Length: 295
Image (cartoon, rainbow, N blue to C red):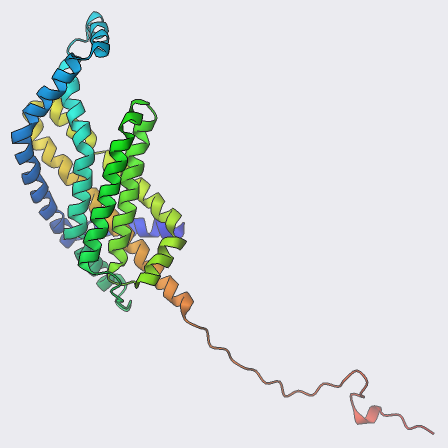
């Protein structure tokens, strides 16, 4: 557990590094351009489609009538944008993670290795192409898990557990792999994944919950249309910053664990000690003077 907390505080300190702050701007620019373009073409049609589906539901018509009787009829206009936002949030999270993994993580690994682990040998157990396929495969599995679990989100406690758990698993898979890709061999990476699976999954779960917090800012962009242009890029930057922090956390943890693994694998020299002292056997006399003559 000490390695877990030590790595976190080091990652938090590295986030204040000027290079890390500059690196966080590139994914931000790409994500803002992407989502503003998608929002310009698909925001209104998506809201209209969700609103039509809600109004056409006989079950929800009773709910709307109950809300109107309580004087909360205005909620009907807010529900459709919120549904679109919550549906788009997992996609934003996963794409942000992929962009950070491809653009930021290699530079962050080099930064941490140069400043903290200059003597750690690079075994290059995975190429950039292998890392890309690993990230895409993990992203596909996480997306499939999200789609399958959507019906369970209607159960109130599970919506607070399942999405962060899936995002945490995705963070653990992608970021731990990228942190070790350049320095660890394949055997070392498998061994570290086996030994540290629970701490790495815990880190992924924590980062999954951290990645869910900017949804409040994102939702505010729907509630206050005038601030939408400002709040949505802010939410995307928070996503990017959190994933940069998460990436640094995994890098510090994994490289420190790799260094410890290699230190344990080095055979310790055995020093043979030759005892030149003479010890008398039980039936022998310890000293010639102790021999008693026999008459």
